[in-house]
Every structure is written in structure tokens, then in C-alpha cells.
Image (cartoon, rainbow, N blue to C red; front, side, top):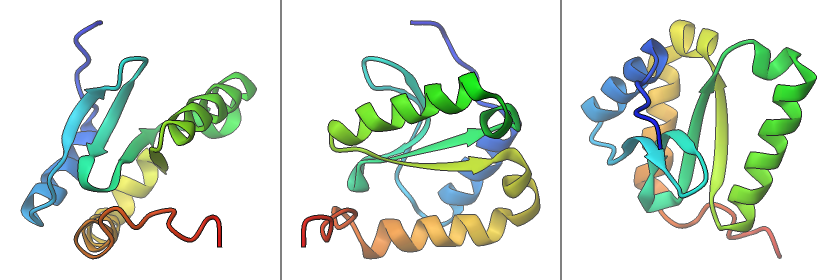
Length: 113
């Protein structure tokens, strides 16, 4: 497993989450792939992606597959673009912190109702 260094945008978000007291792991290895940010309390993966993940067919299909297998394993994936991190960091960090503190283990609880 290669040593992956977080991108500037991942570091920006992790710093903002740290300031809000969110517990997370950076560049988490789930046994199959690296995840940019993992919030264990919610089984939430946060992936911060560049433009190719929204414009290149191969990347989109790969992301669908990754997210599907993560979901089957009980994990939820939130994808955020680099541009959103750069332009809306505070709002994104606040939203993620609110989810982490107010909805631990509640994500997906209404899926089968």
C-alpha cells in the first residue's frame, strides 16, 4: 500500500474539522482503497475530488463502483470538489461537524422505511 499524501484541499478540510472537534482519519486504507477522510462514528467517507471525477467517464464509473462497494460494506461516501472546498470551506466544515455530532450512526437509518 503506497504512502499517500493528502492534497491541499484535504488538508484545508481536515484542519477545519479539527477546529470543530470532529474525530476523523486522513488517507484511511479500508483494505481496498484509500479514502481522503474517514469519520468512524458515522461510517462516513469523504472524498475530495478534482474536475476529472465529474467530467471523465472512466473516473465517474470508477467512483460509482467504489461508492457502491463502500455502501454494501455499510459506509456512506460524500464527494466534494476541490473548488467547493476552496470557496465554501467554512460552510462545508460546519455541515460535516453538525452531521458528526448530531447524527452518529443515523445515516441511512430511514432507507428501508
